[in-house]
Length: 430
Image 1 (cartoon, rainbow, N blue to C red):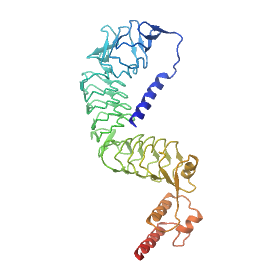
Image 2 (image 1 turned 45 degrees about the vertical axis):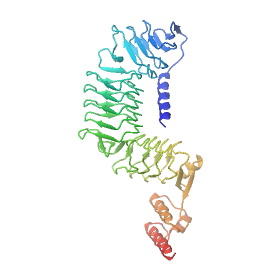
Image 3 (image 1 turned 90 degrees about the horizontal axis):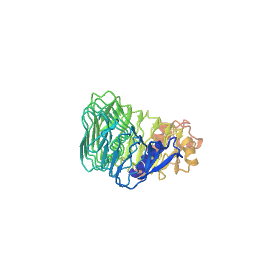
Image 4 (image 1 turned 180 degrees about the horizontal axis):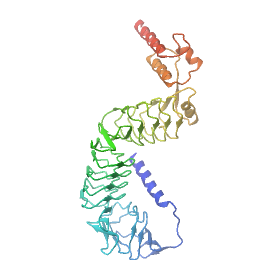
């Protein structure tokens, strides 16, 4: 699943680079394999491990370097713009050097910064050090700054840092500890996604914004804590919520508990909130939640039971994908929209005859069973009756004929109680 996510992220990066892209007839290949369009370095097609970008280049484009065995890059004084994804795939890179005369960029210890060292632009993914202390004075850790830095285990963030960019530490799989300093206000989308060795995260008072999937796929992550004084976020049992706990943002994928009951205050569950939570077997969703969000339980491979309340109206794409242990799932009649790809192919839906979910299952060839009461042989029949009663969905005459045990032409909890008595009496006589 992690490999799939990596492919998805990479495709998203390529797509962002290709928006409005056209192959220019003006492209020229310079000596050394530098493909340029005017003064823009479009891509490098050479084989050198130590690359010196020609003087006169003013811009280094998106994905200009595709990685390979590239070990070092020298940036001339003429460069004024470096695309944030220019070095994204350079996983062997150990050193970036900016010319001292460059007016926009600088370097120190092989790391690329802006000129006045208020932004850390790129830390070479191939550097072998396990610890790095970001220099004091840095205000922004740029988008993708530490992406694929597999060697890093510890990163010290100074109090000067205010922003941690998108995918800043994506795929830092050895990262055990990162201290989010007390002045950070923003943590970008996917900032710590797939940091599979990270065990705990502490959110300080200052943080105002946490982006989508910021801590997703942290398979060792057991706890997210939030300062009690934070005005925007809170935590309970290591789970991340908004301040008033009406929205659940992230359940740590490394938690070992097999059962979780979402607090009754929660009305919204964020996309991918439970992604890759492989220990969870049972989840109870409270009444009031209306949407089962995109990829919310994606990759919960041990999940066997989910209670979907009758407040839910929509189940989005990927909500239960790769939930390979979820063999049966009851869909209440309140659900009126199901997106394509919402379920794993191994899940059999339990639906009410004539409901939207029934129609959707037929049209999309999703395995299903109809919820009905045809006899009083087991307690499961009682449970099915209670589900029918709770659904508020109109019962057919045939269903009423079977389930109306007290003869009042309707099906209520009194009929379920009567059914229980019938079953108990049968068992006592055996």
